[in-house]
Image (tube, rainbow over all chains, first blue to last red; front, side, top):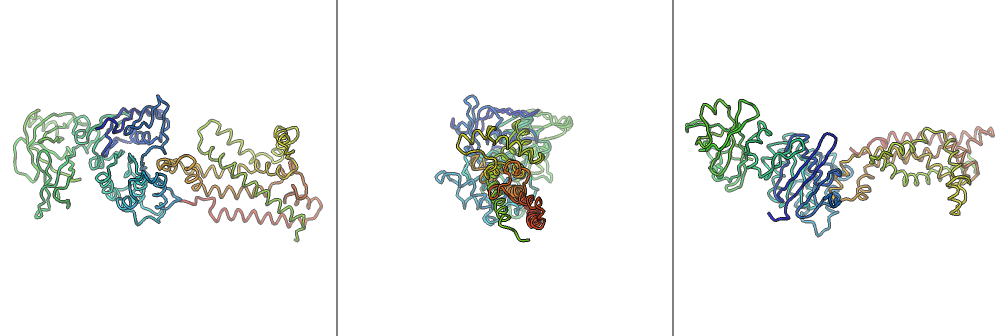
Length: 360
Length: 226
């Protein structure tokens, strides 16, 4: 990473009993998830970066530019920061139609600095047919898509998304997620994505910052960070890892596809992804079981693995086991009793059976 | 109920006064309303109370203090004299000044409520879309506060048309200069010309009813958006 690329945020905010303190060094590319429960300070951190929290103090550098430095009494007003901000509730202007909303930000950016084309943004978010409509006549999902396009059309150097899916039901989420993935794949624009939903993070993020009660618990590349033993507790039932791989084979007879990753291959339900396509799979710790010998079962994904470490889970009956499969790390959640019965120790070679693999 | 030329002169004067007053009020009251809606200053309470005073004070009290302040012995009177404007009491400009104070809360409060109802959301969105403070005010706050501005304009105008006590205190009863409708009605009643009084009083009654009817049925008092 070049020295001046990325986001360096040493910020403090206090309101009443709540305090947020961060000292973060984030990459200047990809999707960075700010993950944590409600009240952990993730939205506040995003607002600090946008300049919407005037009471924040400290220092903020983005791609080599100083946006805030209280030691030099420097504070760049939000409208001077080259950001795009997507709010939880979209915050479209009710007095303007969709076209007016989209043009609002774009017009305020000098023509020479516009890198995101009008047609491209409309096509990317699928909103070309909504241009003449008023925001009040749109569904929640449509509003959010307009909000994202409106932010994109300012050609931001940094896109900030504040739980854009939180106010939507499951079906609407599924409607928007593919658009967000396309943003990730097709726009070379760093994105800060606030979320408390592990499935969204697993699907979209490249880098994760875990926040709790105003403090940063962990930050790092997604797969590495998810595979840590001290963090899964924060994810509860959703503890698990994300592996990156590619579609290597499609079996038309059984409607299955083979995904090859560093440590081997997995069979997943074929969702139509083309051969060679890069995909992510998510494997939850609770879906991984351990056996000392290979035997036949209904489970089609069985891999050789080595135990790397184990740690406490949130309930005393459970343990989390960290396993290496080739270059990749998986987590398994089992009862303490099973771990004792199987005589699991670090370095032991075992077979793991994976009950469910979600192709993201 | 034929109106005399004097009556028509009073009607014209009242309309001129109300029009001028509402223009000044929108220019002066809107920034005050914006400040009251957005500020976290400890002066918000006192300033809000001062703006609201004319709603509870008898117009004679307000008129009395304005008379003192604008007159030869008052600070404002001293200034207007220094600038060669003479003294404002018993002139039409004096009436405009008095009416602005008198009708201020009727414009400021609906506009302030409308600004408050906008909330932070749209203004923050505008800020992240590169709009500076003035830009946000004119392209987001004012259009979204339109219902409040309409209500404030109607109330302020109607309230100014109907003022009496303050005109009596500061403007007197000078034909073609300060004799507005309410003064003319008073004159007719004093002269026992009840028929003439009916003409003007009935007109005002009808006007006030129509204004309120418009407010309630056109929905200017409700939120036009959402």
